Image (cartoon, rainbow, N blue to C red; front, side, top):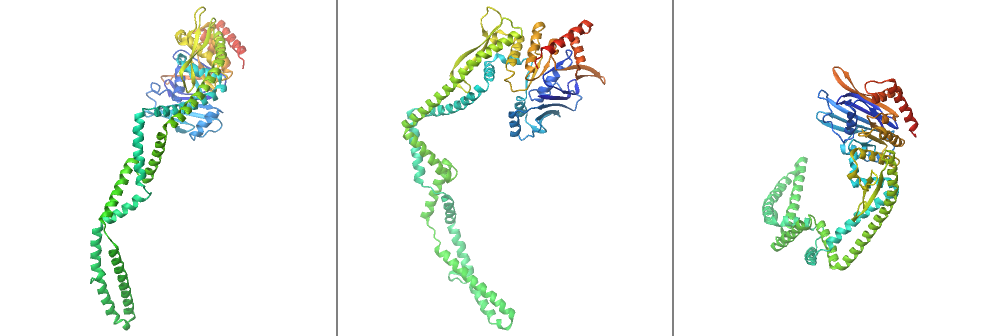
Length: 560
């Protein structure tokens, strides 16, 4: 339910806050008083409108805030998915415009406008002046019928959607499998070549890293040997006279005097350790040089192996693991193509199985739809008669689509005849704009106990009607208000009289400007507003009495 609307700096509204109640909330006022600003503000908050042409030039910012209360599990799930706090069943939707940009928030959390639109579709249904045009499209007719059928149909529709996607997947595979034999033969030959190539390579995981290390060593062999030879000459390895000999002579020299001073003994020991380390180093160096070999043939083998691996990495995947996996997948595909007749046979069986399941579900859906279509037609006809379509006939026409889709195989069209003797024709080619508006109201009345959206807004649904028809419209609004919260802007006293909560929208001067105010009327003020609508500028006692009687009759008419 919409609890309140807070508007700031929107067109003629400087600031207004309106609290709404259950049942029928009626808004009236003179033409040009600013009733459209209210609906415009709601649309802006819900992300279906923008601030253009609403924000006054002298305003730093504009703000619209809606407060809802709901116990809808679907809404709770949506809030949880976005990690938005949702306590006490309250939802506060705010949209603020400042500095040329707007920001939307839900319960204080900044959110994309797309989320606000999705969320609002679960909270409120706005029936604007031109929304009845949606009745011109057959897809909407199908949605209305499916909504009327309710739970009995919804589970089948979910099954149909899943089966449809499964069928489409196998259908694409089937179409791909049925390509020309020559193309299959080419693919078979190419796959055989690739599989043989990968398997013949016998790649080992980690092999490329080992080969690259060996290659780096071998390709720098000459440089390594030159460096080692120079090192040996300097240190005295391999018979060279070098640092090792000099250190040996130095050790013998200091050793000859070590007994004369303790410090000399320590220095002598240190030098002897250095002599020993140099000996170890020179032996290690000699061993390495003796073992180090440069095999040009081995280098060529490593180069060729690395070239093969790098070519495979470019062709099949950038690691040996991916190359091996590519080979496995190609081997599986090769086995499929090699046993193609069996593969086609299995695929065809699966295709036919899924097609049969889908058609069976579609037939069950059609059967249920046709059953409910009779009930819906009867109820809409009854509702239309209540709305002063005295000679109306209404029916739902079914056509079978060539292929089953996500929602089955039905195409439906609402058919109507509003005059005796005339045949049933598609709704869009018969009904006028005013009639479409009343037909939409009739459908809303029929769907009232099926519609899970709690709040409905009707913006000037009374366009083009008066007298008895207006009275019938008001009665139908009261029926819907028994199950829903309704906000309605109207110019007609018959509809306004049905109000559970009556608001007046009026322009008043303030600080050398004209501003719009919205106020909740008392019972007596509501009667006076009805009298104004009935009598215009001059309200006589007779007009006032008529307004009171109209209000009393409306109370007696309500069933809630």
